[in-house]
Image 1 (cartoon, helix red, strand yellow):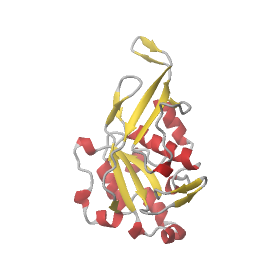
Image 2 (cartoon, rainbow, N blue to C red):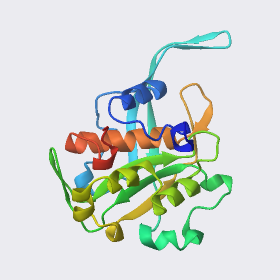
Image 3 (cartoon, one colour):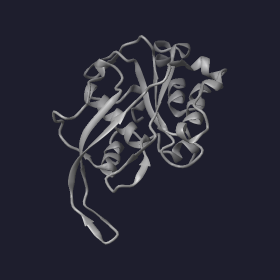
Image 4 (tube, one colour):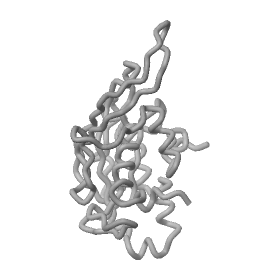
Length: 217
């Protein structure tokens, strides 16, 4: 199993259901939720009511309860992949505050036909890095994209029609650091995993499917 697989970034489709179960199930959207349609742009804030499972911590049994979770995204500058290949100093740094986060591969100024509408953000792939301890931090993940070694870019390499529609020179990436959050058990955990799950779920709720390069083959 390669380093990217160690970070589970290759999981798609129904596997995201299990990730929601790990962090608490999403409840039906209510007035207090922030769950925008992607037609309004790439989300910068998501907020949902969750239901925590029953669990035992020490000698205390905690019952099911409902609570709100909020995630905010400060997306950095958009960088063309061809630019980053020769300018690694624009990548995230190696220190801990920039280890984990989410990223988006996209075609700038491009709308993409989707199953239920058109995506004006041109999003081709959503992923995460640094959700577990290991080498696959955000810097190395973005570097692998620029070098065409990421599994999403390998999928791009395998399709002539995709290459014609979205030339390599036109593709860009942006990322947001996600830091840490406190889960329903009161434990401090890295937020990248939940952030990726929510972004994908919000996208799927907007268009009835995941971004093109997130689709399971």
